[in-house]
Length: 548
Image 1: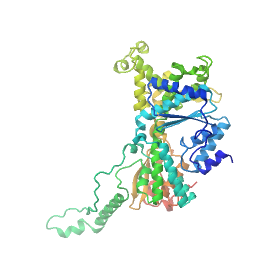
Image 2: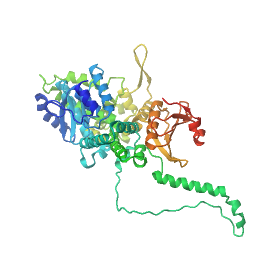
Image 3: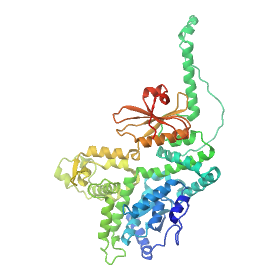
Image 4: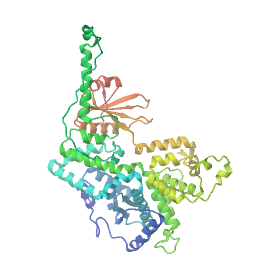
């Protein structure tokens, strides 16, 4: 086993470089160019965090990428798995990591030492675009609370988890982390905007008693009391009160919530060390969640920035024999990033959106007058010389995520101009358009970006039948859930909750089905039952086993 692999599996907190940690010395010719690149990006209008540029070998950048950009994480086997996949992909020519940038203050940019000079100038400009997006996009605002350095916070998490591993055993702690990581996407990212603050703390131990409802008995007819309000009726009313009180005690649960991981953090029967770990991983999940919802806009903005810096400001010629010496190499790099005519990758879609927004606002192609113009020729040649494009793209990068940008700016004109049609590759090797309707294309794109492309699952009942069963509801959008993920997730929830967990969804025929996890050992049976079986609480006896 190589030295780097050993570091991965042992969970080393730092990569040991030759002169910096991590990485290699930055080549003198690139180091001399960095102030020029930073100045050009700043002059273009970007406002970014203080930046640290470091140079890594392909083995090191694969390792940092496996750690999600933070070489200070807690030890876990998943980092090694991701490292192996990235390293082998690079070795076999399947992909290449040109750069990495992480949302911290200061911001860290990692460059690959085998890049050409044009590539390194490009990736620094590209990464500074990401840096500007991290600092100014409203959806990243909760990640900057107090301007704390997330690198240090994640390092502290790693230290605490290592301490728990020494105290409670590495395998036991790792197993618990395994279950928590299965539910790290079951969060409500808006919770990051609502920090809990305790003001004027008042301790009280009072209890409000509720009494069963009774039907009124007219004066003089008291002898009808036992007939109008029979004993079994009173018992049912008392049972309803008891269930409601238990539900309040368990979760003070009012309405369905997406924040299932947060609910478990607050209400699951966990040991202190387990509660601390799930709190740390919940904090990390909230921190990374904006990146899932802004993938297209973030990559599109960075691509838009590097295009303007490299082409319009002439940085392609830096360290080249002549000023246009790097244009062809940059064009080839850009062609690979944007993915060609038939692609809808986030780099291309976001880049085209920003380019189109700049063009429209420069020409005044917006507003009621333009929208209501019926003259096709006049509309095609519309140009009021408004010159508002630069201002508008910076406004959009500050206020939009992927979903809102698609809703507002992906229209018929944009779809046709950039040919964002639905293409299909036929057996003869030819691509053909199978759908030109921008409305259906837009609908599919929006569906892919709702909740970061993940299914929306909500906790609707934490105390079914007063037995502490957890009931989840999948919001149906026409897509069935992937059964292996359903099984793994429900097993994790059952383990953490310590009781049964139910999930209602639909099959390919749009018929309601209910998945359920029995037992609390983390590897209990996963069964599929009908709504009737669920209501009768007979799933364990009558459901058929589909455990993988």
